[in-house]
Image 1: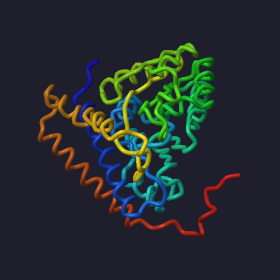
Image 2: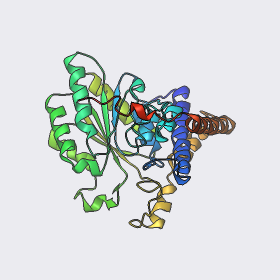
Image 3: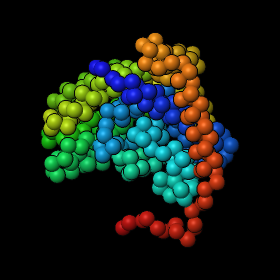
Image 4: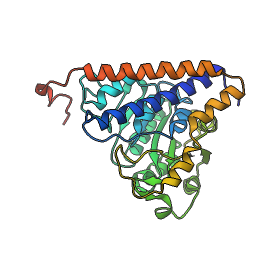
Length: 319
């Protein structure tokens, strides 16, 4: 697949933006400025960016744990994201969602949900709406390997396959459902073969390779847009940090983590861009510096933003 230089550079920009955002968010957490947990997406940037770069702005995503990455990959504003994490009025959900429940409707994010697998029926419902209204939009729910063992996941794939709904189910296999390795919760190694039970394509790709993810996502999205139904896309990756910032991580070996860090998707893509003469080292250095300043500005914006007025605590609640 021929990918334009502008698209390649935007992929790099979004991956670096996610990485720098997560590093800044973890730093704020360590300083005690975040109320609640932070689930970093570090190591999985190529998965979210590869998928979201294949989508239009009016396509919808539904997230789960680590959805800072999904939201930024879809085009969310880091300032509003950071403000939300700090519980500020200027955040996407006016400080009410925090790190775990960010929804950014302006960029097509239906929201992240802490209940594993619960974004699946929401995305399937959105896709049903698209089909009923004759729209060529696509819904993309993200879940981890642990989410693929929930009822919501299987029921969602079944319904979407029966009705040929425009859904791309993205299963990000980082091998751990919190502390449970996938080998203890699934008999099979290749989770994409579960698609066979629902009569839909199952595709397994290297989740550290943004171009491999992008190419698979483009094909799946185009298939959904043509009305040919859903695809299961499994991206094989790894989270370099704990399930949440500050986690002891006693369940996995340090040597394992270091081995996977050698596959870091950002330096890997950077080397590709330079080798293929798609960008120079100085150009990419400029992008890195620009994003670091962007994150410094986002942190400053969030810290200086007002807290929500306690008198508005009951606002935005629906019965």
